[in-house]
Each structure stands twice: as structure tokens, then as C-alpha cells.
Amino acid sequence: MSASILSQAGYSVLLIEKGPYVSRLNTSQLEGDAYDTIYENHALQTTADGNIMIFAGSTLGGGSAINYACCIELPDEVRLEWSELGLEHCHPNSSEFNLSQEVVLNRIGAIRSDTIHHNGMNAKLIQGSKALGHKYFETKQNLKDTKHDSAGYTCFGDRYGNKQGMTQTFLQDAVESGCKILENAFVERILYKHTKHGVESIHRAGARKATGVLVRHNGQLYTIHASRCIICAAGALHTPCLLTRSGFKNPHIGRNLHLHPVTAAYGSYQDDVKGWLGAPMTSCNVEFMSGPNHDGYGARIECPPGKCFASSRLRICHSKIPFNHSYLYYYGIFAISSSR
Image (cartoon, rainbow, N blue to C red; front, top):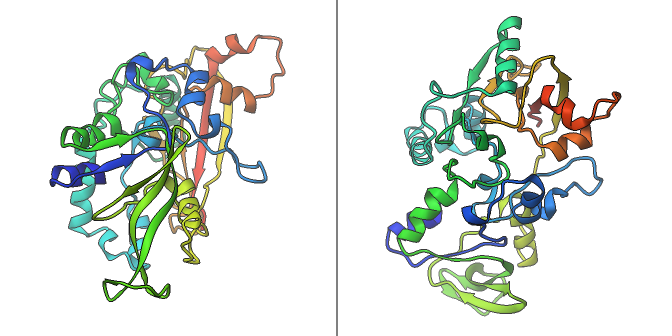
């Protein structure tokens, strides 16, 4: 997004991407292919103790290339908490934040939720929510067609141009405005010089000004100089690592990452669910969102996409019916919890 804004403002911008750019023509939307090409560590990334699996994008477009196309505005209780911690522009009454959020949603096409088609799993979630009297809402999507079968594979790439992710929106705007992209390039560290009162200083005690980056590309090391600034946007996983490799000593680096646990539950229905077809996450049960203390630290219940490999790792088969047959009637939900 920054690359788009700066390029359109006339600045010379180079975007360095650790992963590859996988075009639509080279996208199969097969689960195995996607894990090998656009996921971090082949979708096998875990915490050090192996207790939590982490699905992260490692391709041009980042997380927008593998997410579920579900677009939910930042909740007011979260914005209020952030504003109380000093981020005043995040306050629920902030017109600046509201406008910025609206601009992003407009550009990625996530405007309306009243024209969405619900697939088998989401239809079941809505049906159950209504039967129990639970609160729920239909989520906005940055898909052009939520009914298209390929929408269910949106976390495995975008073969048909259905998802309006970063490569179809902001990055496209950036390239059309002159932005250059270097893919499959690993930033070893940020280069900087010490300054004092805005002037270059030989003393290491002064403030640091970034001057460039050291990049490994095709087995070679290159120094890329920056005349204006460097924006470090390597994601929640890699940004702290890059800053640490670069010698930055802020005590908060790498200390405040929270992985919210996702608890999955699966069930079997007599009728076909076919949860792998159609947009995967078009509804959200918010009955328990406020949490036990009514402070917003609760859980949302949503439907995951029909990832056969990922689901098979969590499912214990007690039946002689083949998994590929029983999967037709499989229904899954997961609860995304918020924790302090």
C-alpha cells in the first residue's frame, strides 16, 4: 500500500520481496503446489515448541495471497483500547481512521455483504446461529464472485483473478506508477549511519538513519542505496528478525507478538456440505465476542476453507468409510480467541 501511495506521488520506489511472484497462469490452486510455492516454510511453520501451526504467506502480496477473502473492520473495542494506549488516531470517533479504512475497503472491492452467496459450511453456521438465537453477521468479501467454485480455493492462489488482493489492486497501482519489484530477494540487514541533530556523526551514540539494505539475490550479495527512506514491512514474523539482524536494540523488538489460538471443531452431516466450494468465510458468529469480562476478549466463530491436507491432520478416523468420501459431508468451524 505504501509502495502504491509513494509511487503515485512521484517517488522512485523499489519493493523487495523475499518470496516469488506466482502469476495466475502458473497457479494451479492445488493445495500441495500452494504450500510449496506461496506459503512460509511449505506451510509447516510452527512455534518452537510445535504447539501452534502458523500459516503465513511467502510470496508477492504476502498474506493477501493466501487469506480467506474475509474483510472485517477493526472492532470499536480494539480501537478504543489502542487509543487509550496512546494511538489517538485509532479512536472509534476518528474521522481520519474511518476514511483510511474506507479507502482500503473500496480499493479491494470489499463494500457490500448483502450480495454474498454462502457455501455449505457457512449456511450451516447461519442456520445454527439462528436456531440458538446467537448474534451473527455476514462478512464483506474482496472476491468478485463468492459463488464461483474457485473461491473456495482462494487460500491456494488466485488462478481466475477472482480475489482483489494486493497484486490485483495496490501493487498493480504501484507498478503502473513506476514502482519496481525485486522478487526472491532476501534482505540480510538494513544499512544505516549515525546522526546527531540531523547531521552525520562519527559517534555511535547518535540516532540512526537508514541508508540502504544488503540483499541476497540469486546467491549474490548486493547493496541497494535509499535516498529517502526505507519501510520495513516484512510481516509480524520476519520484521523483528530483520531489525535484530540489523543491530537495532529496542527492547520491544520481537517481544509483543501474540498468536491467537484457533480451536477447530468438525462434524458430519447427512447432506452434502462440500465445504471446499465457494467463498470459505462469509459469516461470523459473535455471540461470545465480548468475552467473560465483557471487554472484547472473547471469541468469534467462523468457517475455515476446506483444506483437505490440513483437515486430515486434525481428524481421527473411526469409520471404514474412506476419508475422501466422508469429506463430502464434513463441516468445520473454528473459534478465534483474543487474549491479553
